[in-house]
Length: 374
Image (cartoon, rainbow, N blue to C red):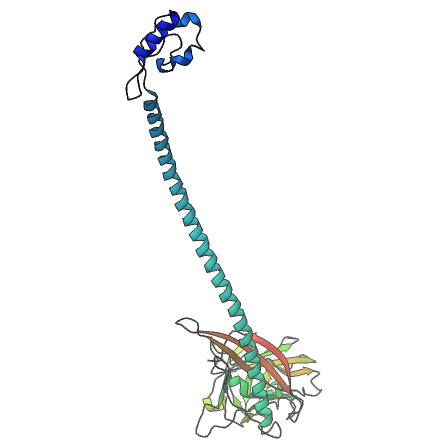
């Protein structure tokens, strides 16, 4: 009887999935479509009880709701991942660009250092070429001359010389230089005289570009003592205002241009060329150094002589035997990368010393300076 009731319930309540609801037994809420297996699972008394007809949502409908929910969640995650991807791409591009710029700047700096080194050696080559030209121009220093240089070594590399100070040749022992006292205005004044400056530029007929014209002078002595410089006289022409100039002061030269200019082969020398102090109290022994500045000197071009040693020792002693001149040389490397050309410049100033007669030429000092030969 029980089994027959169950069969009737199953046949009466069984339905297919089609969007319709199924009826379930009250004992376990199991769909009657699977009641055949319930016989093996339900207790006997449950099968005797009348089934309640409670409608529930079909399983396919529940699964569809779950699918839509999961799809919406996946769509949201997909949009968030796209944002992260774009941010990472931007960061990556920034890093790539920064790395490229850094690499390009590093390469440029390396090339600049290479070209600066080349320019420095080109400047040194200009100094040595000028010395060579001076030596081979004559048999001794009295007739040796040389000129400005503008020499291309290779396509984009060259050196140049040519400041006026390059052609001022200083000799202290030719006279020879000596000390004396002169009474001027009733006052004994110490003089250092008979030193020589020659213009060793090659003579260019019909040109004044080979002249050198003095503009300033700086006289230093040590120990300083209590005295002061009174005036500078060149070939019997006073070229400074009479005054009281301290050691190391730079004094502007005055007088006519002719008094301050030397043509090629010309010189200031003899006993009428001297430095005069305000009194006779110049320390003894003493060291005297003089630096001359010529008229083509500027903020971009150096035309100062080296710091020339005029005297060192007791005033009754002998004048220095070195004969010296300075050479300023600029090395140039033209960088032609890109649409604009860049010039890499290095300038050196060398002091050249010769023994009397012009033999045993040597460079006794090098320095790198900021002013360049244009």
